[in-house]
Amino acid sequence: MLGTREPRLRLLLPSLLTTLDCTLGAVSIARLRADLEALAVPRSRLHAPEGITAAEARIGARLREAGWQTERMPFSLSDVEGNEDFGSYARTVYPRLDGTNVVAVKHGNRPHEAVLIGAHYDSVRGSPGADDNASGVAVLLELARVLAALRFRRSVILAAFDMEEIGLLGARALLPELASRFQIRAAVVLESVGYTSRAPRSQRVPPGMDFLYRGQTQRLARHAHAGDFTAVIYNGPSRHLARVFGEAIAHTARREAVTLLRDPNDVPLLGRFLARLVPAPCATSAAVTTPSSGRPVSLPCSSPTPQTSATRTITAPLIRRRRSTTPI
Image 1: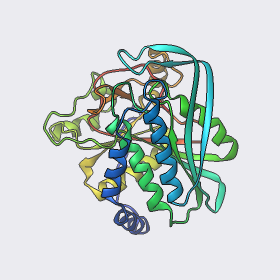
Image 2: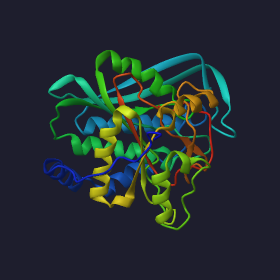
Image 3: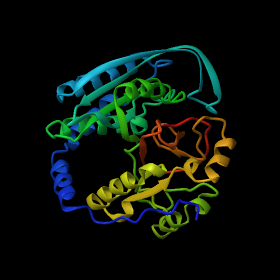
Image 4: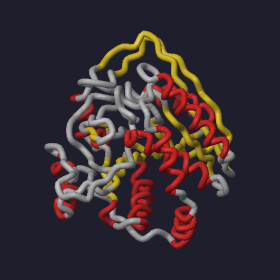
């Protein structure tokens, strides 16, 4: 009734299964771990400039080594509204900010149509950000290596976003530039994908989640509320993309390893009400807590551009408390 029922997962098509299994066979756990460990230091333009500069350089070097067309995309912002990256994450205005997004492109047979895969590479104050979000960046870099030999119908864009923790400012600066070059047909954003716990009751759910996501919360309860799944958050236009993404996870792990949740702000009628409660252009009703930083990470909103489907993957533990931020 609310439009939040979890899409029914099916078996992947044989052609997709073959591609998926071959791709998985090329993944290097050792390389993922090496990138994660190298990136897991405080990284911020505001309070850890050496760490963020080193991360930017490593990301660019890894993408170029994999054979992707890679560029730094600096941006400057003046009198921009964002949020602090500590304490209560209060809204604030920054007089001047200078950051850099790192973008790699592999052109497809339809070069002006693109699929965007992204992850932010900054961390909150005082945290090495191993899970949030060095894990997402490590996956992005491994994807660059694994996908390099493949051919695609559409172009693929790999983007490492700066300044996510203070209001998704890097992504907001980047998307208009990308939209001027490509028709972004879909987006997958990797967020905090490095943590899991099979312990019972390691996954808490916020008040009201059982109202919005009854089937999903019932499934979590049957699984003893273990935080050992990937949450795939999607908006309405990306329902099919999210379902196929979930089917791939279910194939490689098990059905209980994935939970699909429609972005609460994208829920018809109710989403407008939730957006009014949280003072942000693309507000959320919940947040994710990760062990690496000990504080919440925003869930995603609907698509960054009207023609784009957006899916965001988040590894549990899931929601514990709220934060007023503006996620992509």
